[in-house]
Every structure is written in structure tokens, then in C-alpha cells.
Length: 287
Image (cartoon, rainbow, N blue to C red; front, side):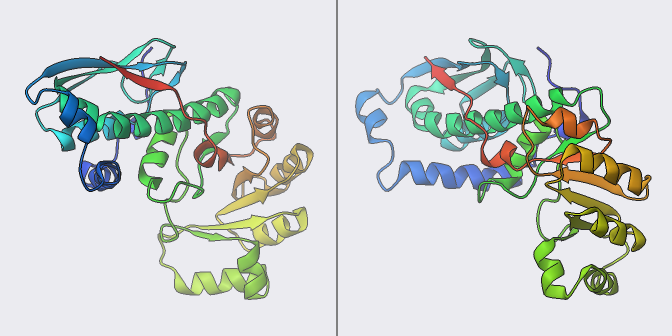
């Protein structure tokens, strides 16, 4: 099947991907390199192989997998059959590779690790996206990512049809309950933020009661995160807001619950599970 036709599936720049993949290869090669392949395979032997999905899902991570092969041996040819964002069935060939046999085997595990993990993230995201289809809600990720893999995991979310929340602490203000407690209240926190940020920075505030929501609306916060509210409460929050702020629901988001959350009328639904708990998609390299 064709990849999801969304413009934001454009992958990260190679300058961002290569250091991540380089570290993974260094970890795998250790101090002596791939002693097994070097001792069992003649140095000039050529091979071709296919990367195959062993189960159905959404592909993501080919940009990292191809980078792994390229960093080991720039002469390896990597041919994409089903691009990142494609829906694949079990047995589907995702990509084909050909080149020096030793090099293919040396890069294999790192390439598959990235492809399996990131396809798992995209698949988990796609399940939520499909579940809210027909509503106005959009699925977004969080900062609950694997250390060092945020750029790639957030790309995988986009491949699954979701969109990205902030990438780090520096690209938006998100005032959470602990910020409010430490600052001495919602009003104090908002006033201090507004005194120190530029005109391009958005402010999001986390609330867990309708009383806090009303206070946030009176302070004209850009986005309000409705934390761990049940659908009936979310529905009341949407009525109270009357479009005066963007509303994001978070907490308790699963494939079983997300449709009910979306039908309350919230604008965004955030999930940490799509990055921190996504099952690996089973992929293999077959010579």
C-alpha cells in the first residue's frame, strides 16, 4: 500500500541521523569489529538480500537503516520498496540491499534494530490515528522518548500519521502541576512566563480540574492540557472553553479509549505510549 500522503513525513536531515546511527554501530562493532563475518566470509564475496516484514504494520526507519549500511560500506546499494509511512503486510519486502557480503552482515543488526523499533512506533501511532478517524482530534507524541532517539522516534510518529508536540524544553512553554506548585499558583506562573518570553513562544498550561481550566481561560493561555480527565469532564471542558484556547487531552490514552476521548471535541490527544511502549515490529534480513 502507498505511504500516508502527509507533507510532514519528510525525514530528518542526514546530519541529524548519522551521529545516532554512528553511535549504534560503534556500540555493536566494539573494539575488534565483526570477527564472525570476517572469519567466515571471503573478503570479496558479493550478496543480495531483502528486508522483509514478518508482521503487518507501518514502516518507518528506512532512513536510519540505509544510513547504517552506508556508514559500513558506501558502495552498498539500498533500494526502497515500501517507503517510510507505508502500510505493509506480513511477508512484504520493505527494501532490498546488495553489496559486499561481510558489510551487509556487519550492518544488519543495527539497521534492523532501528527499522523494527521505529516501525513499531509508527504502527502504534497509526492505530490511534485510525481509531479517531472521522473526528477533528489529532494524535500527538510527547517527550517520553528513548534517550538519544527523540529525533527518529518523533519522525516515526509522523510516519504513522501523528504530529509532534514540542521536541524539547526550549521550543515552547508547558507549565505543569509542579511548576504551578513551585511558582505559587497558576497566575504567578503565567505572569512570570509572559514577562520573560518572546512574542513567538506559545504557552501551554496543564490543568486537572474545571476550576483550573476557568482560571486558565481567564488568563488567555494559548493551549490547555486537560490531564487525566474522563470523557464526561472533557466534554464539559470543551463547552467551557468555547474555542478560546486549544485543548489537548492526555492520560489514559489507548486504542480502546481514544475514540471516546476524541468525540468530546478536544483538538489534540497526546500519548507517551506510542514512543515509550510501542512493541517492536518484526522485520528480518533474508539473503
